[in-house]
Length: 319
Image 1 (cartoon, rainbow, N blue to C red):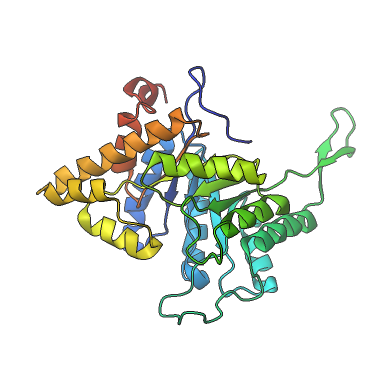
Image 2: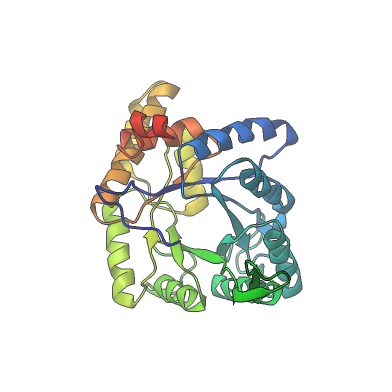
């Protein structure tokens, strides 16, 4: 179901991203995080997929756990990196067989240690191609559904199959490998034309960056909802690491606030306040909801939702 725009009458939609545990001894901790996040009532919980399939099996385990133990829709990340058509189709079928019907189709990043310019994608060259493949595998696997007709034993009515929902990434500051200033918008248009129904942004640090990006995307012809992805930056070390991974420009105000705060708890509060303020500002500008990168920690992202007024004690108790 498409995300609705937040209003005074309807609660603000929100969702979370997790990653598979890097070791078996962290599974119990992640399961507790999933329980706490699911209790807050998100629209979905997404689970990342390692480059080149490095955490594919564990991703599916986490997705199955979400589906089996909560009422929240799990969303599976898939990437083009290193995948053949046959391998990607088999993987998609495996997710579908597990009852997963939401996907995030990503081109993906080069594996660690890959040389600049070295081929890394495999048969699938773009996220748009992956979107099409997901749709095709689902259509081949279940072209229609049969519904029993009451009072007529053995009779069935044929109905259209339930379509998968495929989300894609969007880049408010432009894709780091774009060859020209509008290439990331052209790519987003291609993803929507291929069948994508939702875009989720990579992180950004200022509301006007997201809002102006949405405006440019709409002018270019993109019509699907563009969900802002917000990452609470709760330490100087995390900020440094995030900038290394994304290539984003240093957010001076946040960097200074983290630098002058001497305690770990104080830095955490700085990050929560900044993320909550960002969420409030983009929602005021018309964002259709909030997607929070949780770093497998429920306390921080739930604190962001509380500070932004999205998750109140009354709402939590009602759940």
